[in-house]
Length: 526
Image (cartoon, rainbow, N blue to C red; front, side, top):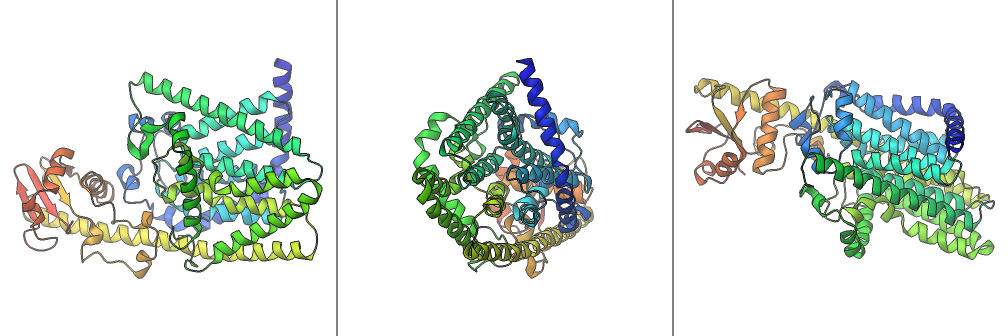
């Protein structure tokens, strides 16, 4: 056994040394991402929900553990809980770039131009931009992606039967211990590799089925290790899974019970993501650009299946099945967390779809004028989509900056009025109701409305617990004012109080009212 492990370690190390040829891809990806997200890093921009709640210092504790993110307990202590920019975002982007190297090597891309495009498509997606606005936890997203891609790489490149599966399973468990949504990236990468293998004449159907079985083994082992580690941590800290996003409903029976509905939802979310009704992915929303790209990919791979059918019908049938499972692979987390709501942050697996398919297309050796033109047209449209995505990300960053400035201006005006009325005292408690974006003095440009929801700084969820924490973050971190918000119970009661609802909004006279030791400030109607 020891000899096998030593042999596996030596062979893996040799494969790792071969990744030196991707240095230029890593450098290109990192430089591209620094230029792309410079505005976010320079102004330390975060979203106005979780991002402003924690801001620059956070150590994961009980809440993260109840969400199933047990490995965060250790990762946050590795960087002392400090998350300031540009360092934090640079670390995150470096982790994503390293993960992309492992992904590209799975398809033996080398220094092919398509590899550079694939890397930029992934890094230049709104899902990555959204991840960076959760600065207090963004390195965990980058590391989750890196560990997931490393698991795939070891399974594909590793020699032997058991050790690659065991190693990959351990890495997968750690990836899920950081953020479960990246399971979709792993599934999409594996599915792409199976397609890549099917189209190779030198690979038999039995080889592909063996690879699928090995991947399934890695997935099962990773899931078992993840659940075991999670239950151990929950037991040690005497906790239970949270009801947030349906986390408490994790179970195999629940997954099986809702499997048909979850699969149908996976398809809906996939086509919503690339369609007009989903998130704003690029400047060409409202045009069939991304559907056209998906159509070209489909045409290319179906053409390959027709050719494959003449040689091996069962390989063609398997290939058709794999193509049909792309939406499910991208949204695998929805099959596990059946009650989860899909946010931009969770769409990173769908952002990996086109880069993976591009790698498969680039390395599938179909010759002929038809295939050559399909490849060129697909690359051209992907380049156009990347161009539009770059500018959409600039809009999102600008919206964050404008919203932050408008919110700070309003908060400083409130502080000034509180001081004038003798209500500015560290001994008092405060209840600020209303969302800044709903106030007529909240001034932003047209770019704000053209941005994704995560970028609407000052437009947080209009409900007591969220409003309380967001205003606390604004006053504490952006204004440097020590205003203590009242308890959640008092906040909820005052939020529903008819007298408070009838108060005028900032800056009208009477928008400040003292109720006992609590100073109520009404910013906007709610």
